[in-house]
Image 1 (cartoon, rainbow, N blue to C red):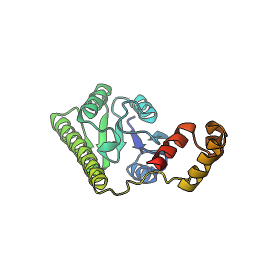
Image 2: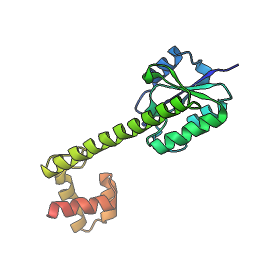
Image 3: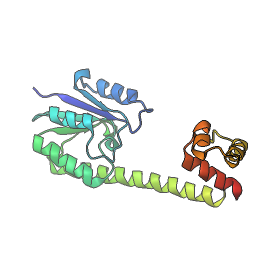
Image 4: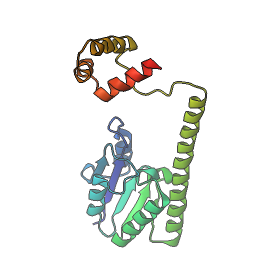
Length: 193
């Protein structure tokens, strides 16, 4: 008896797979046949739950995903993935492609999968290019790039430097501030310039 195997993935632990899971269940995937990776990048070749989902597939089964980018980032990786599915005799269904099965064993299905994989990779690269361009422009304009806010103020560093000048060990002063000695020295140098 053939069945639907669902796979969902998010790149960070803060993200939620709730929507993906709801869409997969609505498409007919049983909860027992749903595999979910949390905090796993699509750039990684091995993903624990995807590996388990692939292990559960048998001839005639269909792997169901919500979007093509849940499988990977590069066309090369996705084509290797399609070959693996073909070797198992399994199909692929991508819900955002109109919900139809993409049979990678047929010439038309293989071509469609290849085109969609290439488009997914291009979209990822365009997004990365835009982010890098934005960072460069903000850097050139001297704008803040965000990041972690400083917990220790410059005034606290100056007071700590006085303690070191009076004979306190720098390592102990840094520990008391809740930072590493290297960070303490770096912040001290920044204040001196």
